[in-house]
Image 1: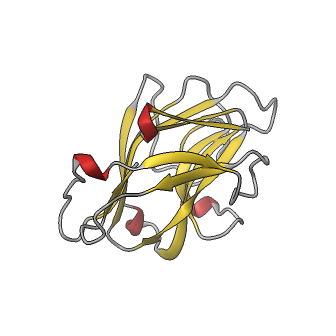
Image 2: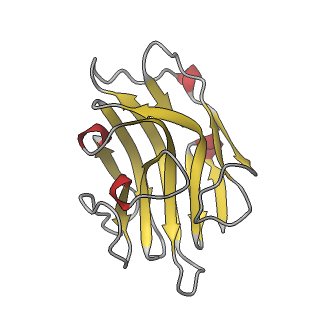
Length: 173
């Protein structure tokens, strides 16, 4: 299972059968919004994103964007033609404290060749309006060897080091 961080931390690329979660947690409220761009250059069974509070993944908390297997929330669909932008009002689906951001690139049968690209991911609270982070707020992203999801192999998970103004309630990577 593989993950690669590109574009100075703005893009996470998952290949083969890979599930990863952040080491950083987030409190998902009724106002939480998840924005990102997604593309896949090779379809697997499940390509998705969402939040989870433990290592027992729940289909109701992962938004499946693409894939041949019917698993997860299917309200958002990727049309394979390059990057596609998504805005998901996560708080309309669920809330919870200490939630990890989870990226999914599943392919159990012949588990090689599938790809998921997640770019310009933003998590923010829309209760007071969307005030984007400034240029100095873009964090670095590294790959860690800890805190991986139950579905993943033992080669690490994503760690995003956020450098955001805590009072503004926006996070980007």
